[in-house]
Each structure stands twice: as structure tokens, then as C-alpha cells.
Length: 257
Ligand SMILES: Cc1cc2nc3c(=O)[nH]c(=O)nc-3n(C[C@H](O)[C@H](O)[C@H](O)COP(=O)(O)OP(=O)(O)OC[C@H]3O[C@@H](n4cnc5c(N)ncnc54)[C@H](O)[C@@H]3O)c2cc1C
Ligand SMILES: NC(=O)c1ccc[n+]([C@@H]2O[C@H](COP(=O)([O-])OP(=O)(O)OC[C@H]3O[C@@H](n4cnc5c(N)ncnc54)[C@H](OP(=O)(O)O)[C@@H]3O)[C@@H](O)[C@H]2O)c1
Image (cartoon, helix red, strand yellow):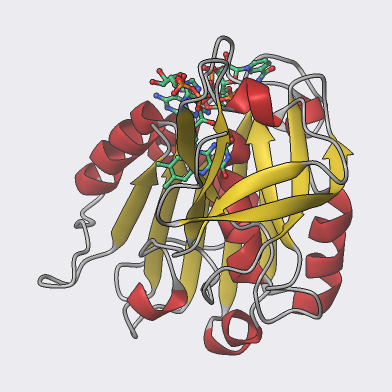
């Protein structure tokens, strides 16, 4: 048995939710450093040859919630032939899993420019996870006037965390706007297509009911790198600039691969 590599700690699976045949959430306890909503850490297991395979996964729950840091939740999709995700899919309650000691990532509340009144959270697939963590924060509720959560998935079965979304609708009282999008299924009252196209045509804005204004709007883009690329192009065409610490702008992104 090889030693645990530097930077990983042993954790335990304490809960599991199966959303579809290939999408699931794991609840994990592990003694890692304090994280911030919007961040990710590594999950790791050994492969058949005994080599460690580690990948990044975003926290779905805020550390400031009741069980936050004690029970960390991750939303995972099994990538066909994926080295780690297929192994994580076989984990059950009380199994060991290894967790990165030091969380990382800049898709946090601190990085959002102070002018922002309307925060647009644009996600594909499992990238809704870090946005749910951000929406769990009391600061999010106090600081912004509108929160728009856009979740684009292939089929409606992947519109996960509906109960949580309902709770957010109640908690935010009109400030929270949830826009589900499916791309490979016709579903009554749900947009069918892709985020960049709906942004370009103005349909996303119509459905959300929140106008885009450069002096109020900030966008976080997360998930499929081609969605991030295409959406960034549309945002630029609409007159928005990429944000960085050195040069303030209107949008930032995190690619999942
Ligand atoms: C900052 C960050 C946060 C992330 N958070 C999450 C998360 O919360 N939940 C989650 O499920 N994944 C997340 N990922 C992706 C995750 O780290 C792994 O890449 C993914 O689980 C695939 O790993 P694998 O070893 O199974 O696949 P690998 O054997 O490494 O194969 C990966 C290849 O599969 C393809 N692929 C197709 N769909 C995906 C996909 N959804 N993710 C990654 N690669 C894909 C890509 O071509 C990629 O090169 C995140 C990635 C980053 C960089
Ligand atoms: N979702 C499933 O049913 C399923 C099942 C088993 C395994 N997997 C595997 O899991 C991995 C991740 O799948 P996923 O469904 O979570 O993620 P995904 O393939 O990134 O799809 C999520 C959403 O992003 C959209 N998208 C893709 N490219 C885009 C672009 N350039 N601009 C805007 N939107 C774009 C997709 O639309 P389009 O549909 O138009 O591409 C889909 O609505 C893949 O390897 C997949 O093979 C998925």
C-alpha cells in the first residue's frame, strides 16, 4: 500500500444522491483547510496499478451553512472512460476517498466587482454546483438586487437540486431568477438550445426578466469550455469585457476541462 501523497487527506463518504444513471452527488467528511463558496478541491483515488488519480471538484454547499465544512458535497458526472469519475461513481457510504487539503479557485464573492447589482451565473452540467454554494451565502442575498441562475443541460433529468432551487426562490423573495435550459429534449415551458444563442437573441434576458446593463451586470461562466468560449464571444459583441484583478470588467469564467 502506497503512502498518501502530500496535499491529500483521507476522507469518508457519508452520503450519496443518485440523480441519473451517470450523475450523482457525494457527501464527504475530511479534515481539510477552510474553503470559500465557489471554490473547488481535489478528489483522489488509486487506479488499478496503484497510481493516484486526482481531479478538481467544486463544493456544492457553502462552508457557512449548518454542516458546511463538516460535510462537503460534490456533484459529479461520470465521463465515459473517465479515469477518476467512473471510480468515484462506484463509491458508497462509508467508503474512503482522498481529498485535497487546500481548496482553490477564484470564482468567489470577493472577486466580483463592487458595482455589480445583477449577478448572472451561467452554467452547464455539473457546473451549477459552485453557483449553488454562492447562492447559499448570506452575503449574496444582501449584496445583490438580482441573482440569475442559468443551468443548461442535455435532458431535464439533469436539472438537479430542484428542492434546493425552490428553497432559494422562497428565501430570495423575487430577487432570484432560475432559467433552466435543455438541449436534447423538448420540454414544455423550458428553453431548448444553448446559452450563447439565447444571450445573442435576447431570449435569456426576456425569460429571466432582468435587463442587461453594463453598469449593473456581472457574469460568471462555468462548465463546458466551448460554452465558456462561445458565451464570452457573445458578451464581447454585446460590449462587455473580461474581468481580471488588474483590469476590471464584466465577466469571469472557470473551465471544467
Ligand atoms: C476547477 C474545476 C472544477 C471542476 N468541478 C467539477 C465538478 O464539480 N463536478 C464534475 O463532475 N467535474 C468537475 N470538474 C471536472 C473534473 O475535474 C474531471 O475532469 C472530470 O470528472 C473527468 O475526470 P476523469 O478522470 O473521469 O476523466 P479523464 O480521464 O481525465 O478524461 C477527461 C476528458 O473527458 C472529457 N470530458 C467530457 N465531459 C467532461 C466533464 N464534464 N468534465 C471533465 N471532462 C470532461 C474531456 O475531453 C476531458 O479531457 C472540474 C474541473 C475543474 C478544472
Ligand atoms: N448528459 C448526459 O446525459 C450524459 C450521460 C452520460 C455521460 N455523459 C458524459 O458526461 C460528460 C459531461 O456531460 P454533460 O451533459 O454534463 O456536459 P456537456 O456535454 O457539456 O453538456 C451540457 C450542456 O452544455 C451544452 N453545450 C455544449 N457545448 C456548448 C457550447 N459551445 N455552447 C453552449 N452550450 C454548449 C450542451 O448542449 P448540446 O446538447 O447542444 O451539446 C448541454 O446542454 C460528457 O463526457 C458526456 O459524454 C453525459
